[in-house]
Structures are given as structure tokens and as C-alpha cells.
Amino acid sequence: MVDTPAFLDPNRPDVPDIVVPRGLTPFFLPNRPVRGRLVQLGILADALIRRHDNPPPVSKLAGEALALVAGLASALKFRGSFSLQAKGDGPVSMLLADCTDSGALRFHARVDQERMSALLDADPAPTAYALLGSGYLAFSVDQGPDMERHQGIVSIEGETLGAMAGHYFETSEQHECWVRLACRRTSNGWRAAALVLERIAADGGIELNRELDNAVLDAERIPHDGTDADAWNTAVILASTLGEEELLDETLSSEQLLERLFLTEGVAIDRPRALAYGCRCSRAKLAGILETFPAPDLDDMQLEGDIIMTCEFCNIDFRFPRETVHGS
Image 1 (cartoon, one colour):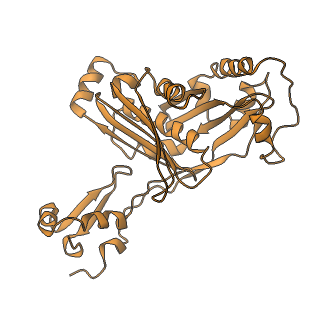
Image 2 (cartoon, one colour; image 1 turned 135 degrees about the horizontal axis):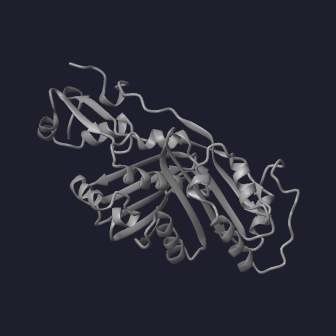
Image 3 (spheres, helix red, strand yellow; image 1 turned 180 degrees about the vertical axis):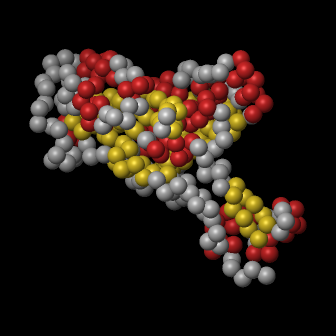
């Protein structure tokens, strides 16, 4: 008989303890209605993606989703999490990625291996739409159990995840947003990045500047005589010149990349924020779930005396000796 309660059992396999200190860089264009975030996951992308045995196109899609939610979650002004969920009739029937306000990332993809093999035989590099199929895309903001959850849902539209996100903001939020995502496997492992631009009120960039650290590059403000629409369009045109190779180039710092990209407009850069490996599973949560099952069901679940529950996010097996779990 084991005396230690299941939820206090410390025998959990190790998970990566990885923090990328400068994973996200907020910025804005002075005197222009444009602000944005540059996300560079670095080694964190490889740690998250390699926890799952997915085909490369699914891993690429997952990396893009992680970079996207990291960029969007940075706008949270409270404790909580921001998530992306895509459900469709394609080989990837479900994709979920989320990020907390503190930058903790995780993801899970549900893949039909037989349909995926057939798709890859026909097209070794399928689009995001080919992977997901027809369905819906949902963005959710969760402020905890005591607050109402906010969720926006739209149909999946576009060939890339970036286009799908743009469609969401255009139709659900009625908010202009431009997104460029990149993910690929390099000689150093998987890498993922994102550039997100948002159009804000005309004085938004100026107001935001008051909140930044004194070290922010706001000394040289370039006057702009055009309309807000012109300023936004110019920023999008400049951002559109950014290719995947440059976005994933680890020899370029975020400051170098942004200054090079918006050289003619000027750019003010906020303090970088950390991103981290952040699965939130726990033995306590899983033990609580198990104890809602009747004893006969728990007996059927056991394998050689243990009940094994696998976290879909970090792909870790939690073993609970049957005699330590007391059902309902």
C-alpha cells in the first residue's frame, strides 16, 4: 500500500526549463497609427515542437501558431491566457496553441495519421488550409474561473495561418491587423517567428510612448503629413518586404531587424519580454479528474497496477498507482 496521495506524488518526468529572455519585442512607429510585436522563439520553438511526433508540415503549422499567440497574448493587461483554436475537416482536425500573460507557451494538434499520409503523398508541402480543411478559427481570452471568457469565432478562410488570422481580425474584431508568420526546421532545430502590426488610433503611438522606458528610441520623431490610411499602408508595404529567411535569421537582433525594416519611418522599441516553455498540467489536476470516476472504471483503466494519463500538451505520461486513487 502506497501512503503518499496521488496529487502529492513527486515522480513526474522532467520537462524543459527553457526561457528566451528576448522572445518578444513590442514597438510602434512614432506619429503614426501603427504598433506591433516581433516574436522570435529561438530554441523554445524546437523544445515545444519536438515534444510531439508530428509530420513536418504539422510542426511548421504549430510553430506558426505558437509565434502568433505569443504576439497576441502580449497585449493582455491582466493575468490570464490567450489561445488560438482551429477545428476543421482536414487531416489536422484540431490545433490548439495558447500563451499566458507571462509568456508561457504550449500547443497540441490532433492528427489523423492515415489521412495525413495520403495528403503528403499527393503534396509534400501542403498549405495550412489543406491541413485544417473547412471549419472554424477561434481566438479566446481567459481571465480565470471567476471572469467571463471572451471568444471570437470565424470560418477558416485563406491558405496560410497568417491569412486566417487576418480574416478573423477583419470580420470579428473589425480591426486592421497584418501578420507575417514563419517556421521551419534549420540546422539548429525548429525555429519560429512572427511580425504582427496593428492599426490604432492616430495618437495611439504617441500615447503609448509615454508608457515606455526612457531608453526607448524615441529621440528622432519623423513628421508625417499624410493621412492615417497612408501611414498604415506604408507600414504594411514595408513589412511585406520581410521574407522568411530574414525573419528567422538568428544573427539579427530584434532591434536590428526592426530598424532595418522601418528605416524610412523610424521605429520606437519597447523593452523585450521573455517567453517560456509553459505547459500547465499537474498531478493534482489529473488526480482530481481520476477521482470523479467510479471504482470499476478505474480498475479497467489500470495497466499492470498503474493508471497512466498522458498530457496532450507536453506529451508526458503521469503514472498513478491504482491503490492511491479513490474513485467517486
